[in-house]
Length: 367
Length: 214
Image (cartoon, rainbow over all chains, first blue to last red; front, side, top):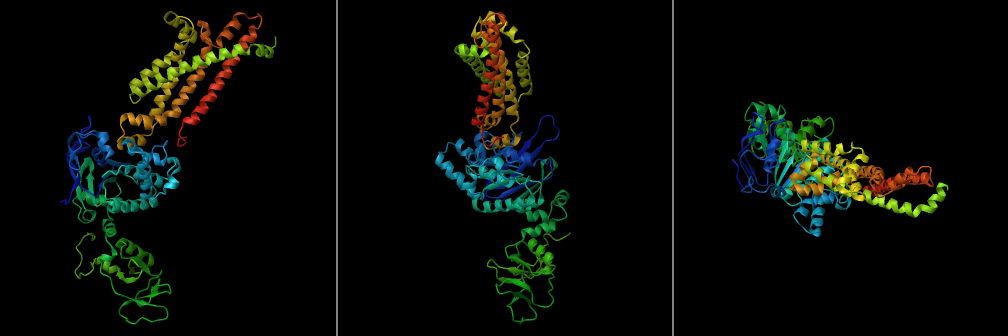
């Protein structure tokens, strides 16, 4: 099922706690491909955090093998293993008595880097997570907001440039607006650094947004389904998965599709003072600066202006814009801001891909 | 002789006794701090061991100081040694208790992050846990010091050095020349010394605690 290099392989891993009848993790096998974000998703107590902590051996497995980059890590020194694996937790756990720079530089210090190299690395990482080194280097954690603390937490985890990062509900304690921004930043960051990331969450939306793959756990750490987010939303393996991803699954799937991938209707551009020529096509009236003002053709009556989206936006965003504009179509702009077509409500619902006249595969349709 | 005249005449002697007193206290507290912090590090995280260690050292505090000084004479003789040894036994408890409390109050998330980033047990203690517990540990040492300054006055009962000699000497000759002045100077000296050492610890705490704490 997985092509390419496997960075982390769990091979029939179990964890029994003495005195507990049921194992916390039972015979779990899971391959995490290099350079991907794999999300461990599931309800509370399903063993997803236990599974994560088995990888860096904060919890020792009772049975089974764990391979990181081909090496069986159940036999190596756990401290040396952990220095090769970034670790980010929900409460961040910054060291309050150390400055931001000291926090980030701690693992490099433990690895014996010289001061100049540590300093340069700290500044590089602060830049990478979007914090200005001049402003933040000397600050103490208590002077940072929750979002800033978690950015520093991510920078600290990346300090020694580990190939693998483990993130345990990294954005769980952060307000919704900042959480969205941090999720976007993580995706941007990942596009640049291509780490192998295992991330734990119980939030389906977060899993769908961040995951290249989702491993969905049932209670008692049984792996219910391990697949691409779109596949999990469209074809849940069993009733548990279907009920966990919930009734909004079809809509959520739209977040994964780009507007540019759908068939667009032609749009005629009308400048101020001119009249539409082709009565059959949609026409949009632009102002002097080239910004859309309203639909010029009959039949389109957006009550709240023109819904505007870009080709790289998700179909979900397009639907949102249409609902807000109370219109059944959205004007689509390319990356330069020029109109390239219109996306109609019915195209979204029937999902016609660009250059294909047959209906899209039934993924995401309401059942 | 008025107390002012007495002080004007006798201050060199009082000064020497005060320095002796401070030396005795600081030696005892230094030894007790080493023992208290060391034992604290060993027992922290083991509730039963912590309880046993705290019970034993806490019981020391219930032994009347005069009795403890006396009990040590057969072992250590007269003078400074039994005095310092007794003070050490008293001073361990506050240091130990605060070390255990300070280490236990390190937030779980901080400990988890430190483990997760691959710091060894020793590195976690040195770089993370002790620095975080430091203000609490230092408060324990401070309490031990103030307490010991007062108890050390009794050490004169076993011919120990310090301001206690003025107090004991004065009280033994009460009614005699300068007897009251001696006792008063010794008592005030102990109070002033306690105050001075307290201020010293406030300064030390400011200087050695990270600005990121508190």
